[in-house]
Image (tube, rainbow, N blue to C red; front, side, top):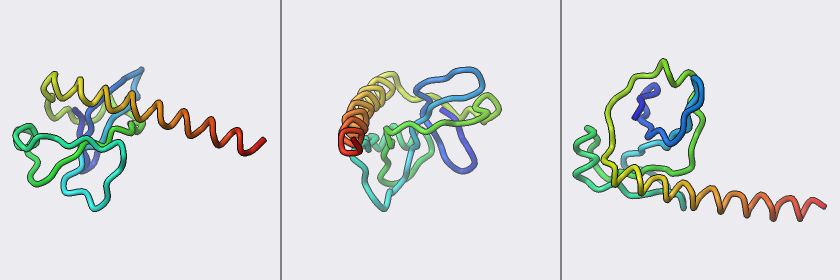
Length: 104
C-alpha cells in the first residue's frame, strides 16, 4: 500500500518505477460500480475511520518507488480487490468495444 499526497492506494501491479493502484476512499460522496466495501476492522487497522471503499478502477502512480509505503492489506482483501479489478477491466473493455462500433 502506498500513500500518494493525502491518498492511499492498494497496489495491484508494478513495472519499473510506475504502479497501478486502487484508491482507498473514506466516506465517498458518490459510488462507482467498481467500489468494493472494506470491512470496518481492516479500515481501522489502516487508520481509516468511517465508511470505506476501495475504488477498483486502477490509476497509474508515477514514481511509485519514491512514494511512502504505509502498510499491507490482508491477503483476503488483496484477492478480493484483484477480483473486482478484473471485473471492472472486463466491463471497460466491453464499453470500449461498443464505442468503437458506434464510431464506424
